[in-house]
Length: 115
Length: 114
Image (cartoon, rainbow over all chains, first blue to last red; front, top):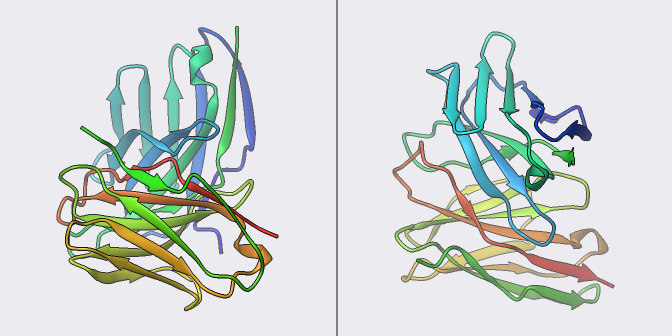
């Protein structure tokens, strides 16, 4: 039972254009969502997060949108740069008494930004 | 400020053997989580340690066990290795009561079972 799904294994975008990565979840208890970027031979690097009390969070070129009714979130990268080429993972977690919690990951989307 | 460090980087074992992987958390973090990432998949939660106790556990058999030391570092032990245990093992650290802060990952240990 895959609770977090990234249905696009890959995405190619021209440099300077917008990249949109999508993620769907099924567990209604999830209330904190994150995006990580992963280069080969490195661990996942945190990009941006959003809690369920918000529907948008921005950090520089990165914006995450959350649609709770559709159980859908997306990551927008504007403008896309060749250095953004990596695997992007969506992750979600549920509150456990205010303590640190386990992350449930999607299977990732390989983003390629073409020069 | 050192981030999360893991050792070794790579490891080759044969079926039936036992392995120990090590993790030092980011400075200021007190909680360590372990994840298994199989090829082409996202990381899957194994378990989490805080105050030297296992606090949460994912859907992994008892062959997977762990430990946390007083300095917050942690070990992951896997007994009776199977071919299916070949994967990247990732350690992540965080602060126990900071639920809205991200976990920080190390670069992982690549485990290959022959």
